[in-house]
Length: 217
Image 1: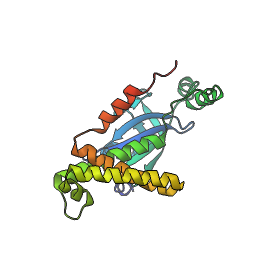
Image 2: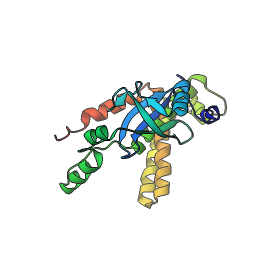
Image 3: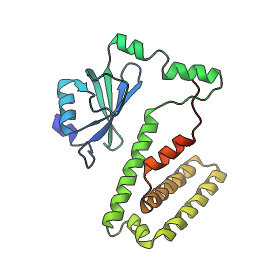
Image 4: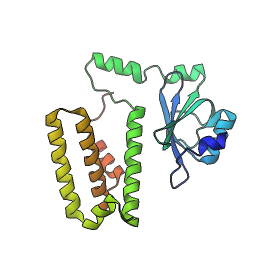
């Protein structure tokens, strides 16, 4: 049964899949971890998960009781719900996300929250970037991405200009569905440009972080 479930999981080229770890009681995002096939199988079989592989974590390196593992999207990431002890949950949560956001809203102050939706968007952009880079290297026939790379930089830039105009027109029409569609096209062509000019997603992230105003203490 476990093996049948894992067959639906899409591991990356390293044999890993991102796992967003949340407290089942509070839905607080606790960590972004990575699991391989054996770790996921052991987690499902034993009902416990060790978070030693967490890259961004507020957790100790102990095992936690597993509540649920949910497959996100088309199997490209997981949401892992765990149970923490009452003492630990109480200690870590008091001025956390929800209450802090409510207080900040009352003071009309900006608040920065980490949410699963944002993580999923980042993972999707990274997956698309990797796919586009693979298209550039292998140039499969019949691929639109291959066509863009074969056509050269000027063609890619022309498409970005066209898609930017489409976003403006869609925004004027005030159709949410149309705006979303045109934004997706623009994001895609921007990623093609980034791959063509060897600009990494982390490069852009670091520049945006550098520009962000310091958070108030």
